[in-house]
Length: 227
Image (tube, rainbow, N blue to C red; front, side, top):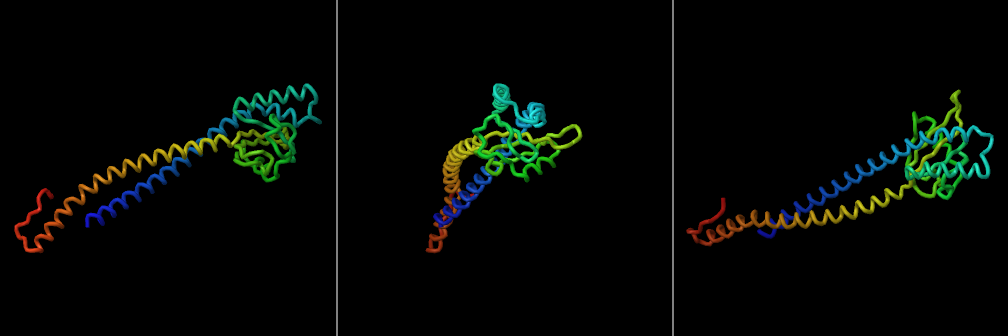
């Protein structure tokens, strides 16, 4: 009887502990992930405002600057992007990439029309975590703003991107630390459960032993120390 009660009690407590830890880990991961994304998008939106003038100038030109002027412009854009740990690029209204602060981050040169359409419908900036259909070399946090002329016509799109590798690193660190914490919690819970099981099952065992002796004819038996 002692064994069956102990096993049942320990199994119940262990199951509740594991379910609680899994639920806590999942909820914390969702909260941290959303907070991380919100922080990235807020930073990118701030940089969008800084670079919008440059973007408007570029898309209104008949052709891109060349030579030293283009190099100087690219350097300025790269500095702006690095200030927010991001990179940026401009496209025309058809999604064709015109200029990028870090060209090696791009593996394609045309953004899908679906993304442009959603960016055009957004009130301010359109946010997504994607590769833009293979335009980017890796999944990134992206803030897109449609640029318009004074008469409201589309003049192009500005893309601010931040690598998703930081999220991947954070995920690895989070789960490794959480796994260690969970193991320590389960170890402590096991010790406490063993102590509690002893306190719960010891009185039951005394009652069981006394009942067996009473059934055997010993009418003088008494159970001591059991409330």
